[in-house]
Image (tube, rainbow, N blue to C red; front, side, top):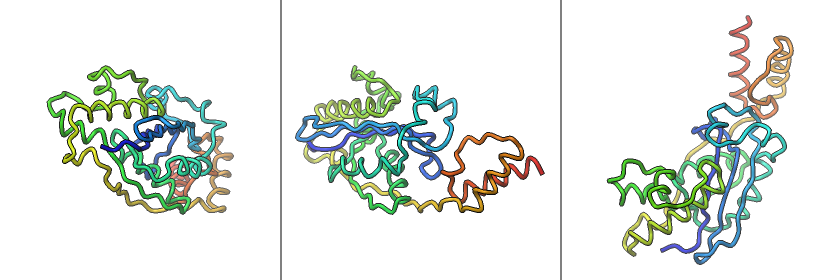
Length: 232
């Protein structure tokens, strides 16, 4: 079985990589079965967190205010990942957010991945649930849920436990497969769009949940239309 990989997990503002953003990254580098390093950072998403995300993760806006942006974080993360395959619980979710960030920065990001969720679905179909939380409880794996590095550590332990119980050389779920996610690059909001929004916010004394400077062109248009529809 694969002995060298990166166990990775992200916390995000929501579930859609095309509209939501990364708020925390945690990764564990495993070389020949041994942990050779960790990567952990908050990421400033340029927007306020919804209360449900605060409650789920324990991360709050104050934690992210001074955090680096994904544009600052991504090159360092890519160096850490190297050419190793990614391990994750529903790894395509994490890959999709990283792929989106890479496309926005015109950085190539192609990876193979191993998915503990797919392994669990194949071999543990009798279980009521196969979430990371549930499986960690099932296998008595210590787990601080919904924090990126802790989830990455738990996923690594879960992978080892599943491999010990179910791995055979012929079984493909334990082998890295090419990850695929198609996404278009976001176009930043134009100068005129941002200036118009600043005027509308000042005129109507509004507080937006997303920073104007971090908006894409489509986000700026959407917020402008929303304000005009309400106050015209």
